[in-house]
Length: 395
Length: 138
Image (cartoon, rainbow over all chains, first blue to last red; front, side):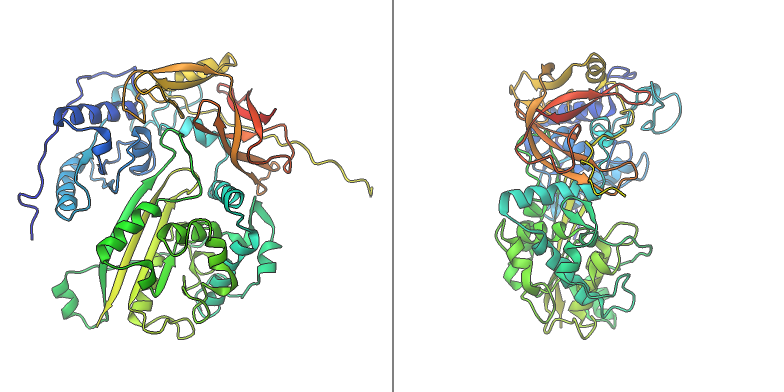
């Protein structure tokens, strides 16, 4: 197994400017991208992989993908190793292409240190000075957006389009709390009712206090190994079957749709690679920053039709031993843990416990052979990165 | 104690100075004159938001500033109650030109907003920076 001969560099472009007072850093990235595409004879919509490092302003690869309107990106990588990043990126792009994760990868570098006499970076300009930060910052961060109110915007629109109710969203918290009661480490261990959720204090319409995840310290770690190492270790084997990823953002603001997430793209890629369907999933770890996050992702992953998430999560359908799709049996971000406001790793950890048969006996799913973990990072209401992982227990 | 309930106050929110880049400077210079600009691409003729030097739809560098009346309808919103300075509303407006714009809704009570409601831009002063666009019901 090697990348040897599996990928080609077909476009290259060096920006002609050495002093760029009249162009922003994102603009320079885009001009470089445009130059390399023209050199290759390809167009922007051919790009399905994007790589950038710390010089790209904003949120990982997400701000530049959104700025450039790269609508078809299904593989992204913002590995940062300083000036060597772009060499690593070529290697990573070749790996991704060899694995079929993308076919046309764009790697960009750009910056304007001559315009930032104040030193490194340049996002934090003083009033009256020009900033060189994320392209969206001036137009967005001034409005007091937080996770609460930008996810609130999604819930509001979902309710408007599909008639989803606060009571339906509350069922998601209720299910998580039923699981958390058995987790000795859970931040919130008390079982709650739908009434308690909808009567809790309003945080940002229509999300109540109990629609929100907990804020906790802590962390987690994972070890992923080659098959021969797995065989040599005395632990149950959790085999990775498929993975999918996608960014989503306003990308110019045309046809804005806040009722779906990047899971509509990452999900089918992961299911396709794994060769399974939502009906095969015995347990699902679903990112639960808010109740609405779970509902939208379940729809987008195909566990139910778009707009029917409210009905799907009701009446305990997500409670292990009660409903059809046991979810977040550790109590999830809603009750157990959301270390440093990043819930992705705990989603994988509980899926591993379920596949190993090592979840709490009160929530262990019988014969749990195939599990899914899905996460959304950033904001569903603005721009985010979605990732879907499908795992199988190997006897 | 009075048994007469006070009418809910209209929402206002202090807005910090926006980060201005070399690319966004024309927008903020116009804002200082009370003019709301969007960008349109001469290549694909589409208007986009937030404004970019390169079109996010067709990648043409032929994008031009266009003055907009700043009229549209509320796509969605959320009133943030967890705020030490009182509730405020964030949301998106779908402009009549097409693109959706993130903003704050002002001069309206917390229960006075609805999806589909007609709104229009106005400018609000910031501390040490140019005024920023906010929207209010028409």
